[in-house]
Length: 140
Ligand code: TYD
Image (tube, rainbow, N blue to C red):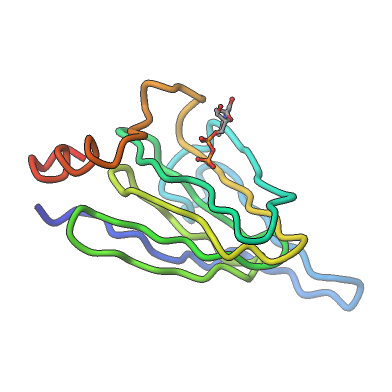
């Protein structure tokens, strides 16, 4: 089943300044397609390591490369969608139901994630076989 909202890169506000640039987000700004409930960030990733390898039943996420770069690989059960994040003024919107892996982290990179839900382990699908079963039934 085709998902109604696809993953996509969202341009964030940028305030150019010779002293250094600034970007920002806030709830109800019409830019992020959900209200922010939680923020976490991934950093100090050793070379060659992979993060993620799960999907969410409900949680929506916006991933931002605050520093450095990394790859985000998203699978909808049929097709992979690949993104390179390396700009602190762009966010990748990941709807629920996408298996995701993050890899190819550059040294010093920081991945900030804004999410629509509080942390809840029951919202995770951590087994790929389970994800595939859900996807085949249109329930991923
Ligand atoms: P996990 O979501 O598996 O990391 P990744 O994004 O690489 O898939 O989370 C790793 C650990 O951190 C896991 O034990 C759950 C814990 N955790 C929290 O306690 N709160 C959080 O908000 C997040 C995202 C993870």
